[in-house]
Image (cartoon, rainbow, N blue to C red):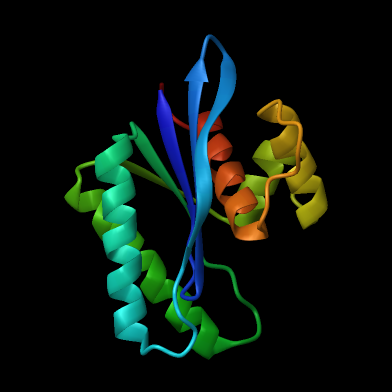
Length: 157
């Protein structure tokens, strides 16, 4: 089973691709889609949509797990990130992929065992679960790998 995890954002969208083989996770790929900071939001959304669509087409994941939006302070940022989530969901839906969505609390609980884990704890657990010799970076990519692991932990397969 191949799972694509996505941590949406307008400037940086993290992605992480893992495969489950014989009850062990294997890292396939991870990284970020980085849009130029000064381009208009619609152009950023097109770029995110095209890049996510290409990743899905090239890797054919069985499941796409997407982090849900959680913001307390900045409504403008929340709206933009919500729009990025929308194009990610559109790309996955158009590719007819199963989609699961998780809050940051659910991801942390699934990967670390408690919902108040910080970024370093999440990175360390992702490193341990995937048996890596390094901490996955940048943060958005590490978060996307955590979302992918959470997706598997919560799927019906």
